[in-house]
Image 1 (cartoon, rainbow, N blue to C red):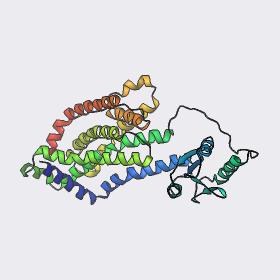
Image 2: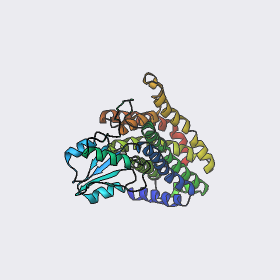
Image 3: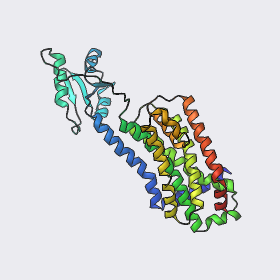
Image 4: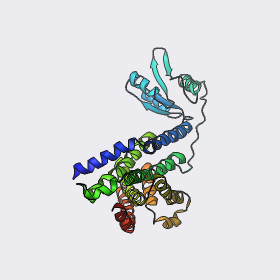
Length: 333
C-alpha cells in the first residue's frame, strides 16, 4: 500500500515540475520570507552589536553590554566567521597594541566610529561615552512586522498545498487519467492518500523553511509542525473538493482564491479585534492555527494550548469533510 501511495506522490511531483505554476507556488513563500527578513533586519541594524573573542576579559565584556549587544566566541577565527555573516556585527579583539575593531566593510549602518569611541572610553575615563542609553517597553516582544508577518505567512501558505492538489486533479481529469482509476490496481483510499501527501508535505517544508529564514531563535519546531499538518488538512479537503469538480485549471484556481477571504479575515480579525470578540472567529480553523503559530513564535506556547488548538482545527476540518464528502466522491467517479 505504501509503495503505491509513494508512486502516486512521485508521479505528481514529476508532473508538477513541468508546470511553472507549481514551481511558482513552491518558491514564492521562501522569497517572501527572505524579503520580510530583510525588512525586519534592517530595523535592528541600528543596534550596536559586538562579537568578542577570548582575548577580551569578562570585566570588559560587562562594560560593553551596557551599550551594545555582545556575543562571545572562543577564538579569533570563529569571530571572523561571525563578522562575515549577513547582519552588521563589529568584531572586537585585543593584542599588544590594544583593542582592534574588525569590520566586514559593507555594514548597512556605519557605527564603526561609535564603536571606536566606546573602546577609547574604556581605557580613558576622560572620554565621554557617545551613547545615551534609554530603555522603554511598548509591549512588543518582537517587531510587529516580524511577529505577525511570520504567523500570517505560515498559516496562509497552507492553502498552497491544496492548490497543488487541485491543479494535479484537474490535469488528470483533462487527460482522462482520473476516470482510469476505476480500473487501475489502486483503490480509492490509496489514490486519495497519494494525492493528499503533497498537500501535507509542501506546507510543512514551507513553514519550517520560513521559520528558519526569519530566525525566531529557539522556538519549538515540533509544535509548529503539528499546527501546520493540522491546518493543511483543511486545505487538502478544499483542494480535493474544488479539483474534482472543476474542468480547467484557471477555474479551479479561481475557486481556491475564494478561500483567501476567510483565511485573511480570520487572521486580521485575530490581530485587530479585541480579545472579547474573538469568539466570533472560533468557527475558522485558520484562526486557531494563527493564534497557535503566534504563541509559538513568541515562545509562549504550551503543549496544552497547542493540542487544544489542533483539536479545534481537526474538529472543524472533520465537519468540512463530512459536508464535502459527497461532492468529492461524485467527482472521483
